[in-house]
Image (cartoon, rainbow, N blue to C red; front, side):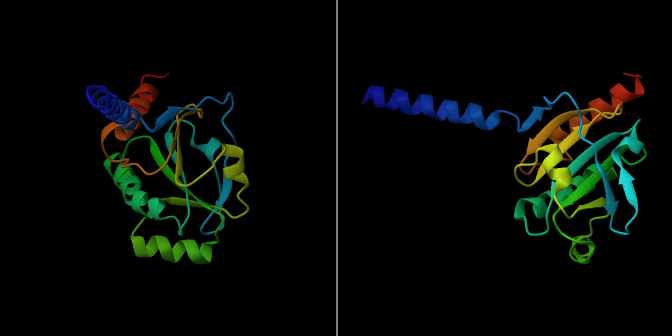
Length: 172
């Protein structure tokens, strides 16, 4: 009986430690993939044009429930860091403007939205599920990746973005 209790306590401790481990992982690829796509109006936007700013790149879709739940926190992050060198870009996975635009209007999301209709950018970035988010530093290097929904407007996600902004202002 005591052994069973000890095993149960150990399993709970391991599960708690695993849950506490950050969802935010360092980016390990040597090169940051290109990201040049059309926005909802058809204008081309290129990640390389955003050097000097920290960029949060979120891959999502209208049919993805966790994505829908996460988008407001990305909007709050953008609003919270307004006036600082930060961009939040949401890259729609496989859908067209006719579906994406009304969805974002209904949800009151006013972030820069790009369309990856052929899912080529998602493939290049190694997106294996949605939502998937990357944090790119001011030098244009992807530094972190996250699979799954987070609240980007508080806690560790906000702290990491703020640290990269501070790093950029120090000239690193």
